[in-house]
Length: 313
Image (cartoon, rainbow, N blue to C red; front, side, top):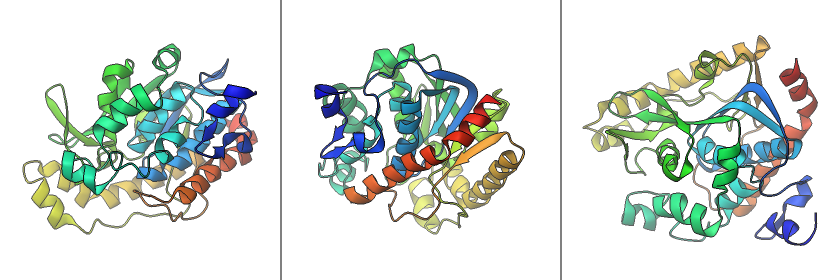
């Protein structure tokens, strides 16, 4: 690859060729495995997932069904459109733009991550999303959202991203720093409230084997949320939101146990950081984000042989 193609793989000074890049834009032929792909959220820790998925793109690995939660749903879009490096670029290229993620945006629009910037300007003007390639992908994608009136998770299919981008926005709308997102006659927030790691859903959806990408490190256990007073005040009309948050640590840790059970049974393959990252859910340090991206890419590379054996058995 030379010339323009190499230029497209540079993310404001960072050359993705340094991580073994072989493709850009729409990927070539790939193996579509009859397996599920489950992507945890985690705010801007999602660059770890971006690294893992870029390695998958380099190796031509695809999945019959993919489920993304919050940041995982955002990253999933660029994976399904085959746009290597795009998920990383979307995260790090606008860190200094007050219209991307800032207190200014929160006060002006009600969203910490500016909805117009993230879900219209970036895909349609600044870093073009390949709608055609997405639609041609034979794999199915789903954004996990939380219905704040029922308290239940819903798994919205991603088919036409011109309109289904609303589901991705809802999936990534963190409580307290995002407006509720209306789709149809219902209101939604972050999918991580009701189903942060939708492995059980992937299994019940017919996937006999699943690859799970987490952003929480090995050994992590969630603790109780400490700002319940603020949450109850903000969502007094939607008690299911704070009820979910009140018991979220219990449900999350049970899910972790289920993930490990599936791994031990040989039905799930888990990729996650080996150590705790200093990257926050909202992070402005570009170097930290780039390092976490590299970690995800390198971790996927390190377990590639085991992953192939799992997918092909």
